[in-house]
Image (cartoon, rainbow, N blue to C red):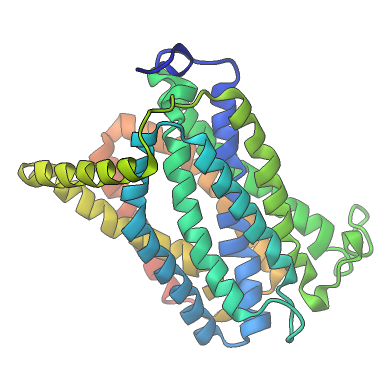
Length: 345
């Protein structure tokens, strides 16, 4: 039986904000590292070949995706059997902090961590990010109660994009613009004496994201109640979780509409993931953008994502979720098709 502190109806003071903050400090990894700053710099400065760079990014995403596919359903079912989410979530966060911080030592030449490490780090972060989502989302109802789920989820989404915009602006003003423009509010040299020739303004995003993730996750462990511990051992929880998954698959056979929804969502979500994964690499490798325009690109798109997160619930109310989704996907397909007509000029 659940304890009173973890009852779905009991909302602890500050728990909703702490849950949303934990997502807000997680999402900048995708914006700063994967899409706009580090990975495009890595493809251009370390790999040096946009075609091979995109292939390496795809390879990293492939291995990470396979690992998630094989392990994540069983992980979620096993944790449900064990009870508490926070112990494993803490290990996941520490691993994410360590990997993102290590990107500082990815240096031009053979003096630091090389291509193999970045490919491995990307695959590992794909798995860790999915594990974080699984465990973090499992704490949503204890954090916000059933009535506050939508508000907390929207707050986390908007907070993640707002946090990313702030970090992109900080990197722009502190590291990218100094030494390139003669503006009164911009320092004459990059902060901390970072050397653009060594890619340090791009590499510093790893430690920045890692530190933010570590500090911003602390309120979650202090304010959000956890599920009570069961008496199940790990081996029994694994076996029970596997049985739970089998029953879920068996009982879903008569639910054709739900299965069609899951299949469709899987397909278009993979497409959205590919757009996110390759957008920055394409802009850097194929279009030849440097760190400065990539930062502007990231700021504009992150602001647009905040606006989209605020507009989506209104579209849902005006049109209904199905029509709103069809409209959004149609516009997205049309805009992506326009990219085919773009060139460096």
